[in-house]
Image 1: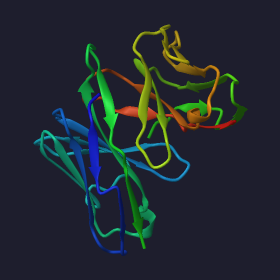
Image 2 (image 1 turned 120 degrees about the vertical axis):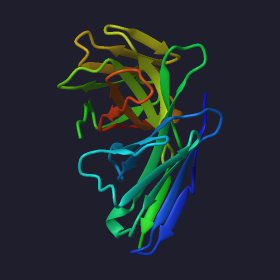
Image 3 (image 1 turned 180 degrees about the vertical axis):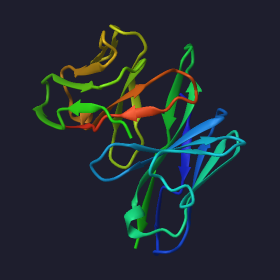
Length: 119
Length: 113
């Protein structure tokens, strides 16, 4: 199947700094990518939909000025956590849809996630 | 945001036993998906269901799309230690590439050898 990568896999930063997380579709193009956040022992919560060439669509309660999303190309979306605080510590996962081989349907392929720890 | 009700939250079983978990929603979904997540990794798709009433198998896994479009179940037969992980159901309104997923709360499965 299609491969989605994320970088970095884990990052530790000081409170008040900004952190950029990259999501790449390695062998397919994605006009749309999704960013999720997952706290320990909880489910994935959709934060925003990243749209290539246009503004991201944020879910209710997600601060767009704090979580900056840029989808500059068909294979790359970035999430920047600005002025990070300890409560932003979480597992951030992206996904991108792609047609699976022999199917008419789009499957969501997930990245391996990025563990963010804010001290 | 909207979430699906998934049960049970956790299961502790012996190797070889069968497992069943389910998801319900107050609203209709046109696609139901089941994912497995290992610690520190992203979810991996196990089974996708696209038609109400559909019953689909993938090896030891069997899943069904409820006829009301508001529920789905996943069965795992003859469990093995590598089945350990968190299983999530997810609903999708349509199959368009921009269509978001709504996840259930997850079922933590532990398999004792």
